[in-house]
Image (cartoon, helix red, strand yellow):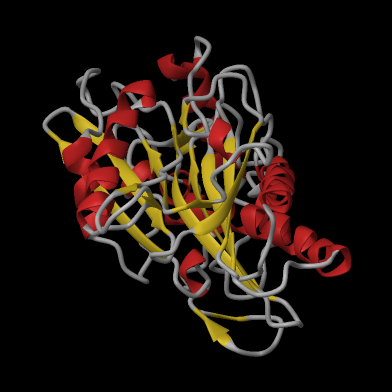
Length: 348
């Protein structure tokens, strides 16, 4: 729990935005280490936007989010492991939405087309069997698990994630602005670049975090840092061009246009750049979506500008929380395992 900028207590997750729910499902063991995360909009949908910066994206329905195109509102965003194969998980979410009568209206009752943009990250083979990937059944399971509770770490789309030489995962963060606007972020951190300063072992994102975001941290001792460098140098996965991708969603209860959502998503990449180095490589498909659930008057330019900095900061904070929450898996060591001296045992 953190105190936001107005003094209220929040869950410090994307579901602090009213109407947003998150569902996650994963498979671990027997050759599996992958999963799917779904961010559900309210039943009437949310205005959506996207910004794709990585050189190797795997996406669905991103062209629809272009402000020049027809459909304004989307009903869910899917983030999944499995690379391009993992896009199959979106079908399970879309079928659940169709069953529930949620989608773009096409005529009579139940005649709807669910709008479900998606992005995937590369985690194939990290559980042992290269072909194992999220499918429609796993997408449906993620939908069925949707709630206001957000699990972080080695779960959902972050199950098989790695960041540099360490385990990646799911992270979330939120902030409430002085005018009452709420912004929340969820990211699946799976990057070619590192989240850790190689000279100090410090999380790049730590200095941007708010009180309560993270446990109390200090620089790890030199022996642990040397051991981490040695492990990275010997890691066969890092000796060839790796495949990765960090994907995420920014949500707000403000009323925004599609163009404003696209800009908000773009600012989210600034947050990634503060937390991961290098970022947006040719081997990452970094993609950020934005959802605006508000139904009132569209934000004017000044109030919209006031959202942009905090939104980017939320992305940075969510990356830090993902790395700290991740648990070792698939031969990938977590930050906590690699740098135990960085923690003093306190909890967020």
